Amino acid sequence: MMESWGWVYLTLMASAVQSVRTGGQKYLTQHMSTFAVSLVRFVYGLPFVVAYFIILLYAYDREVPELTLFFLGFCLLGGLGQILATAFLVYLFSFRNFAVGTTYARTEAFLTAVAGAFLFGEAISLQGWLAITISVTGVVIITIVKTTIDNGNWIMRIWNRSAAVGLASGFCFALASLSIREAALSFGEDEVLFPAAFTLLTTILMQSAILGLYIIARERQQIAIMAREWKVGTFVGVTSAVGSIGWFTAFTLQKASFVKALGQIEFLFTLAISVLFFRERTSPGELFGMMLVVAGIVYLLAVA
Image (cartoon, rainbow, N blue to C red):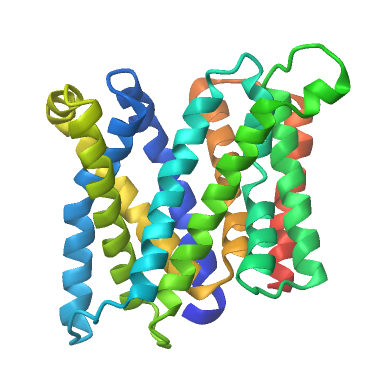
């Protein structure tokens, strides 16, 4: 059951938790820099990831695996990919027409499929490509409808520096997902929970070290703010840890592109929260985009 549908349950759980975590992150971004918020996710989430790993260590009567350069290399690539993707997203907001770039960044699932096929040798069926394309199209439509793109000639509206930065962000997220899967699968085990947990622990330690050194060197004043906001930081850390456990385990079970395509259901969760709790109205364009996302996900589950 874990092998066939486990990745679905884990991805849905991770997407839901990620939607909830967004509120805490939005609060923190009002008080600290983007990289400090990212470090909060890792540092406050690390104790819970360590606890989860120790539980599995004793539950499966295992020892800490031997580290290999192959494993460490892909963990580092995955961790850096997430950090760079976030940096590109932040850079996007410095552009007047950042909405164009944001739209391209939303093609992450499709970019994961392309990178997986050409760089990692992941075989995806024609039906799988179609399902991913349908769901990504829905997400792009929702993004376009929810943002305002300045008037101008069509070439400048659909391709400019903002678009390139958006694609770079999406590609880095894609590379991170594929690298995480590669690292976890390097153990060659049928059991997935333990290698996924060890991959998560190793990656989050690397990310904490990298961002920690950056904050100390460039934004030392953020450390006091991070300590002062420990309550919200703990909430963000816990939800990040739970979500990451879901993502990393799902990546170990299924192709990263399929996991990312299903993970786009987060947009539906976010829209639902906006409608139910903030009484925001949904436009016909958003509804059409939501229908495409649902259709793509249902088709994906049928062919996966």
